[in-house]
Length: 262
Image (cartoon, rainbow, N blue to C red; front, side):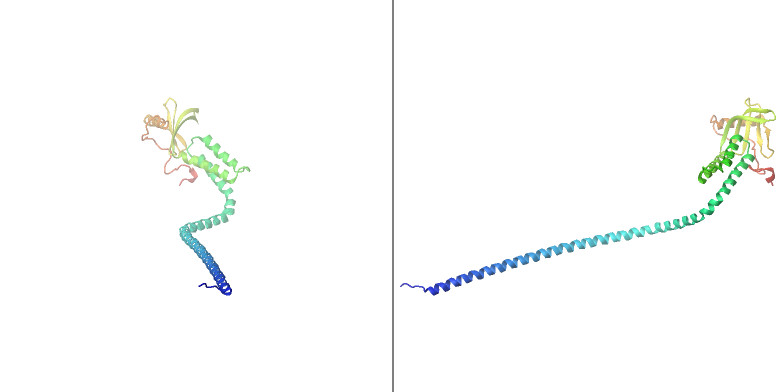
């Protein structure tokens, strides 16, 4: 038996099929939209997590740097305190600088005059050289082209030379002027303690007596000691103890004069 479908039924079935197809498309569209929203949300969450981690790492780094700076500042504190004290001292020195500069000319004059007096009253060795050095300092005090520092350095250098004389064993050939005229002799100097000379033939020798301000003759054994001293000073003999009379005494120290003696 043949069953025939009514045209209206076929239309209704077709409509239902179209409607079901449209609903499925909407569901697929909604599912796709949900997946996109979820993907966007996940991407935002991941981006937020990365930013949070980066900020946390920056915070940790800043904390480490802060601790290092605090430790460095604690270590520098004593040094900065010392620097502050030094600056205070320098400021005080600068405050006194004007007063010091005003007193420098008087200091220069005093040093030069004392040096000249010392040379004049000292043992009579290298007299021309030493007096010329002192005279040049007296003339140089008025040199307009020299700075205060340069003048003081020259004065102090001359004082250092004079002080070094007191630590030297020296020998030289020079000229002696006495009652017998000008003669060439061999001088020996033991610092500022003893000054002696021998004639070239070795037959005459004397020691300077500062208290008496004159030369006193030496006997042969003492002249022999002077010859030993000359060889030692010229590195021709091994250093040894010399038995020689001294030129100065405790009652008449080097650099004093008769008016200053007790």
